[in-house]
Length: 114
Image 1: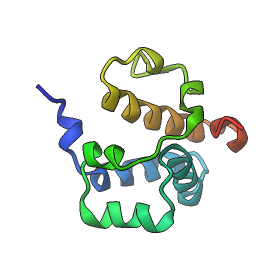
Image 2: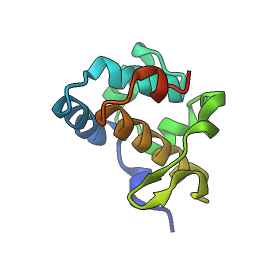
Image 3: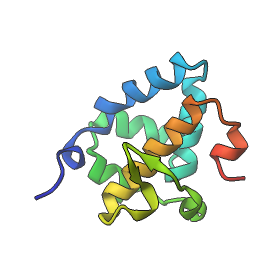
Image 4: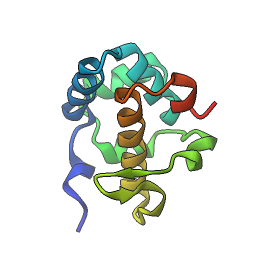
């Protein structure tokens, strides 16, 4: 059985990401930069996904993941992202991890694995 998050519209979770980073003094533009780094989506493509109600499954199916994605390590909700077995869930956890790092005030070049 597929996880419920897979069929959840990305646009329904995006405001929570924005709130999380803004509460910690970061900006929506920085969040969008992190999403662009991970997925390859530019501002226009991200906007289309948000407006179109794209599910997480379709959002990541159309993404071109950054080649440095394997450098994203650590835990989200007590689970090591590098050990998540389901490929889609792992991509979602990568995004969660990057949002967490941004919210925790990590330097952008560290978040973007530069």
